[in-house]
Image 1 (cartoon, helix red, strand yellow):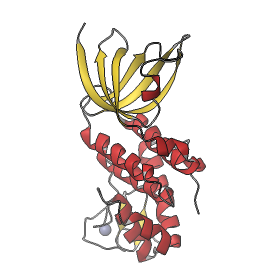
Image 2: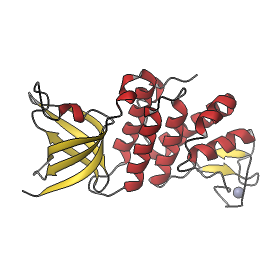
Image 3: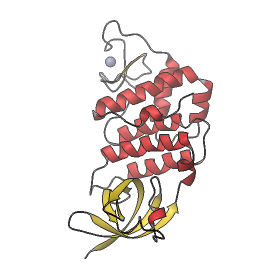
Image 4: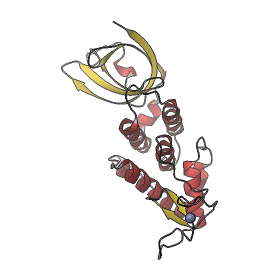
Length: 245
Ligand SMILES: [Zn+2]
């Protein structure tokens, strides 16, 4: 049987039979993998504790007919602090829910892998306000899978911004010519906030944005959720559980 090695992050798992689990992972090289972990629910299982949700693991698997089978698992980062706290755990569950929705099996998506790893690392550090990291994660993940919230130009005519109107459906800001009549202008701080949330790699300035401009953050966060749910045509079930100040 063909074996392979992969790094992956555990998205979720569920029980199979008496002692096994089916584990969904987003891997670095093969996109989403659904695999069986045999015997992990037996007491004293060698690697059951290494396959908890949000764990970053190095795996050896062999290819099965339907599902691959996990042969070995080594922890690279357990992200135990994420699971230990209600707010960070609620935030992480939205991140993995979204990845589980958009990741394709057998299709390499390293950008999504790196985003998930960065998002979990940010939550693992125990931020005072985890929600802003979730908001950023939503827009960045959507961008990776082809739906970028554009605040640099008008989403319709491409005229360079900043512009004062914001549209979920159009995919970003709109200029005054393209905005439908009667559309209300948005506070520039909200537009800047959406831009910040959508900027890849920009994590360090998120807490200050959420703290110093709570109103703009709240509106930008609502936009991020609506944007993702509209363009992916799915509800984020875990979203309402994320505590917001
Ligand atoms: Zn325009």
